[in-house]
Length: 122
Image 1 (cartoon, rainbow, N blue to C red):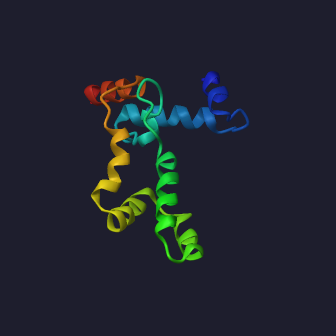
Image 2 (cartoon, rainbow, N blue to C red):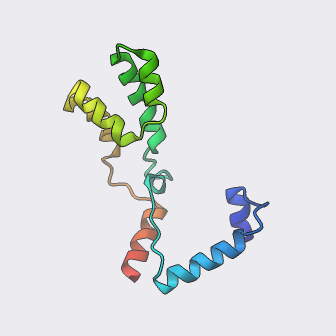
């Protein structure tokens, strides 16, 4: 497990090893289900963007459409991607969502394979 510490930069976390061991036991026992986000698709060969990479151009677009920039900046800085996409759809129509086509990929990575193996194992 020491290699995980280096990989994730948590060498100074005294609870890391115990936490990982406990989580592994709970997952094996069926009391915990890992829930993974879009970051699981970031590694090669998939290389799908994470939410922050999708937020930046979206915020820029919505700011340009705003009549009150200061208010828009205040609202947009902490807005979740889902809310921003709703606003983009309302202000620019369905065609504005075409930039999400980058998510339409059939390339899978090792994380996807692991998730599939876990699902198959029950």
